[in-house]
Image (tube, rainbow, N blue to C red; front, top):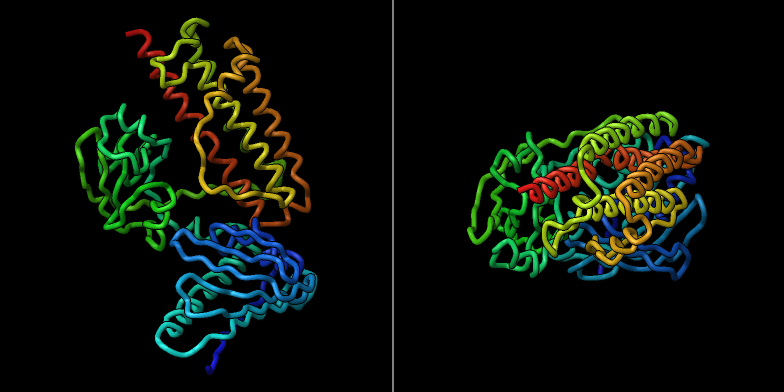
Length: 401
């Protein structure tokens, strides 16, 4: 069978070792190329990448020569055969010449379609690689639209409580004012089950249904509110992108302002909240105020762990986001049983996170894509706190009624 190949060349204003890392480390691949990756960069080692669209490719590394050459197999979902990708790198200290050849492409209709996708995928991917290497921001995030919703756990028990007649879907935890979902009338505890012809059963296929969409586009959203099934038109919003401070010290200072607001809001809320009130649950399935504070403590500890994994280039990938472990909440409450102890521990963790950010290794900061990702996520941390502050306020209000 006759075979063809696609060739791409790009000059990237970044050191060769960082461009080499972008093709060989799973965490780096996720920053510009795919949504899930796992790698073992040695001859015979695995290469696997997956996208939210549902496409994936797998194979093995055939050649890995540090900062010079990478060759791996490519067997994509639904494709008629095995192909090969070869990347060669050369250049100076701060600029890398990259050549990528995707070869072994056969003839026929199936191969023609595959070649079109290869062409589009590598053009977009290499553009994003250059952008993340040179500037930091991931174009898949900065150009991606958003609905303006937060998501929370959903299972058969929650469905029964809400009176929803399905057990698959995604539950809205909050709809941000000024965003498309809120404008369309979507509210907390609505359960999304459809998006413009896609059946929505969990977060993964919600992400797949959003793949390739742009801000300003109109979509149809179907959801349950209790037992009522509703379909509305929604205009996808533009994503607000914060400016990431250029140094670790400045990033820590920016996040410090966020944490100071969180602490002030928490202190104001707790005025008049007694120990007894803070320990009472609205019902058996919900947390008390103390339980919510324990959950916030866990969130901060988990973020510190994630920071460490990103910095040390050892970031794992999980099959799903998991759920909340009530046993962990109870364990924390057994060690910090009073309201004062929980608040002190949370504030200490805030201070520790700030110290982690201020002490980001200088070498890590030069990894612009990774540093930008840390900064982007750090500057969103108040969203999780505000969501649970509202939950605590609602809990105390329900106890007073």
